[in-house]
Image 1: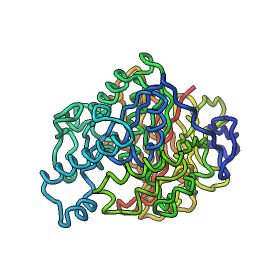
Image 2 (image 1 turned 60 degrees about the vertical axis):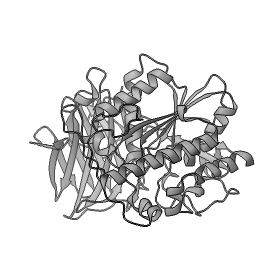
Image 3 (image 1 turned 180 degrees about the horizontal axis):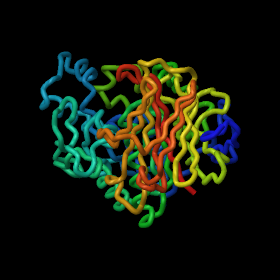
Length: 456
């Protein structure tokens, strides 16, 4: 079959763990906290810490652990909730920023009920709904991102960790590393790479890069991603303290090992009351936030996909999908164009195979994002490569800059796309952050979770 052989051995990057099976999934209890623990909660927006980790915060404090909450944004872009709260449009940039200040105040009230003080909360203040674009496109000498509604290009809050910091990935990464160095956490709770909210995925990616950067200087903490935004999950809506929080159906066949943290009646009531402190958000969607006050909290991450060297054709693959095409673990939109992604390495090149459920029409484009990491070069300087396929043609971009594409070999075969990319073109990375999506006229149809490739 030439370049890509159809007969290959699948090497599935599945983390082998002994586990009980609860709700049909591989699950186990979260380990108990101790007074030696230093628990860092990373929240993309004010309210994520209460709805996703409100029980964990209480248990950690009760055990005598130190706890810090970091807010990536102040949530100032939630225009619909502000309209409901104010009973009028909130349009002026100054009003948008005032809503961000209000949401920060709500966060302080919520965590106080959980047992923390304002000194335990660190606001970074980067742009709500802008941090994924920053992660992809705004580094080093690039122009800082302009926020969608506030129209500012730098952190506008005086109480932030770095007031006035331009909206660049370098500054978000620097702030996170500063927190890691100062607090030296033993456990980190962060948003999930399969979450459909862009800021949630971005915070996970920034954390991964920050942890790789500081790995030689501080002990590696345990990392527990949590889910918030998944289409049709959790159900039923509303405060149902009698029900458990189970994993979304879209992730049931994935390689995620789930950890659950059971909540007692008092902890559950306290969590619910803390959630209700977000008055602006509860007015807009009164049944949504309380949905997360359930009998347990849920955490889980994907295993790293280890890509080995192949000496003949394609001898081994690290596979991120399902052999039978049942769906790629962690899709964030349910149209299911992409059934699988497979990766291999041979002769200094990364080989990628994208399996599709159907032959896509000319109006549908597919994008493969490949963001490399190497300890030999600052992440801001590493190539961030995006391969776009539309109408059978390949376009290659580094960030938003269009390249010739001569370096990338591409073949389209009915329901398969094949890529061959020199690792030197990706910056000779030790690891790659990868995701794929399909879209029609700029509207996303299908999107996979971000995964970590590691070369061994």
